[in-house]
Structures are given as structure tokens and as C-alpha cells.
Length: 288
Ligand code: GUN
Image (cartoon, rainbow, N blue to C red; front, top):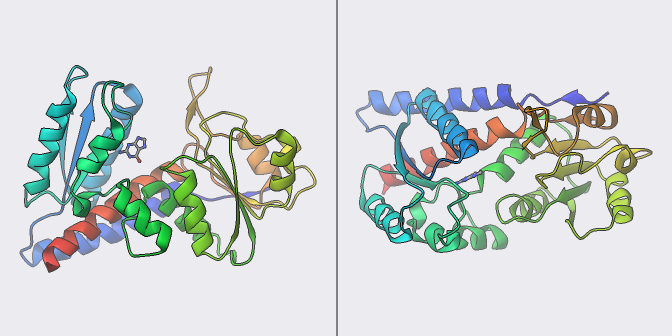
């Protein structure tokens, strides 16, 4: 049976450490860090994420401003809002909650955020720096996965990692971060054959699955394999109304050495890493 990696607990510890540091700085007379979250429209999942981010900010002592624009807003309205925030000296981080309504160009919007306030790490400049190994803002989900892997104490160097999913937000940066840990990284995706998916999963020491589809991996992918660490990034609303990962809890428990549960695995870490990125941006501003 695989052991559960308790993301909730690890994230709570990270938030508490941040809260201590921020409290100390405020006692010394510094302003509080500030994150501004922009949500466009009323996507229920986005509203939940924004609520969770606000709660985490509160816990850390980070001021959280929340700007809610209607679905019918024009892209120019959003860009103007971002420009105001870019020059607001009290705002350390700007986060535009994705997905945006279809009439908006996501890339154009994300590139509008000042690079020093890109706490999601989604700007091309940050992605490029990550690619060539320069200091940069790390995207929150992959950074959180590295924390979860480290928490197991398992030596990662020279082991085999399989990343399933090739999104700009998770899969691609994830592969780069695992490579930084000196892992042998294989990237699989929706066009990978099931035979190859089985082959690579059975040879894996770490599997990070981020497809957004329930039961992406089942018994056949792990049977006779190496009992890898399974990190499940998926959050899917099932037909039962509950949240499910990309792999069932039963399969994860049966075939892994360690695994992240859903919910309570990668989700809390993503938000904790966001808090860290806001604090980093704030500290850079204080030191400037
Ligand atoms: N929507 C789902 N996950 C994320 C995230 O990490 N950042 C932003 N901005 N939007 C998201």
C-alpha cells in the first residue's frame, strides 16, 4: 500500500512559516505584502479557487484585493485594469484567474502583467528563464509537486520520471523542474499510445499525471511495475458530484510507494507556492 503524501499538512506548514516572516516584517514597520486577484465572469470552479487564495492570504498576513469583472467585459477593460495595478506601488502580485472568457486572448492578457508582479510565473520571460535555468518565478503547481516529492525523502537523482500532460502551466514546466532534480524525464500526452503509456509507467519511479481526465491511468499501467511515487494533479468533478484525481484513490494506494490524494494533495501546495511567490516579489520590492 502506498503511503499518503499529506499536501494539506505540508501546505499548512509553509503558510505558517510565511506568516511568521511577514509578522516579523510588519512589526518592524514594513507594509504587508499584497496580491490582487482578477476574476472575469462567474465560473464556479474559478470562484472556489479565488476564495481559497483569499483564505490563504489571510492566514499568511498577505493583503488580498479581489477585482471581479463581468463576463461581458472587453479585453481592453481587463488590460487597463492590469496597467493600473502594474504601477500601483502597493501591489506585489497580480493574478488573472484562468480560464478567461472565450472572447479574450489569454496570452495577450498574461503578457500585460509587469514581469516583477507575475506571481503565477506564466509570462513568456519567466518560462524562458526556467528553460535556460536562470532564477525566475516558478509556476505554482510544478513547484508544489517538487515540494511534495522532497517531503518523501526519496532520492530522485538518476531515477525515471514520467510526466503525463504537456500544458504550459503544468506538464512542460514540470518536466524542466524534474530535470533540474537530475531525473530522467519522459513526457507523455494525449497522442501517446496506451501500449507506450503502460511501458513508461511500469518503468517509472515517479509519475506526475496532469491530464484533467478521470482514470487516465489504471491497473494495467502499473501492474508489474516499480511502485512509483504517484503525484496526481488532476481535479475532476465526477458524475457523483465529488472531486476525483486523474487516477482513482484505489489505484494510487494499490500500486504506489507514496501518492497524493485528491483532494488534499497537490491543490493546497499550489496555493502555498503562490503565497511564496507573492512574498518573494514583495521582498524584492522592499530590497529595491
Ligand atoms: N486556473 C486554474 N489554475 C490556475 C492557476 O494556477 N493560476 C491561474 N491564474 N489560473 C488558474
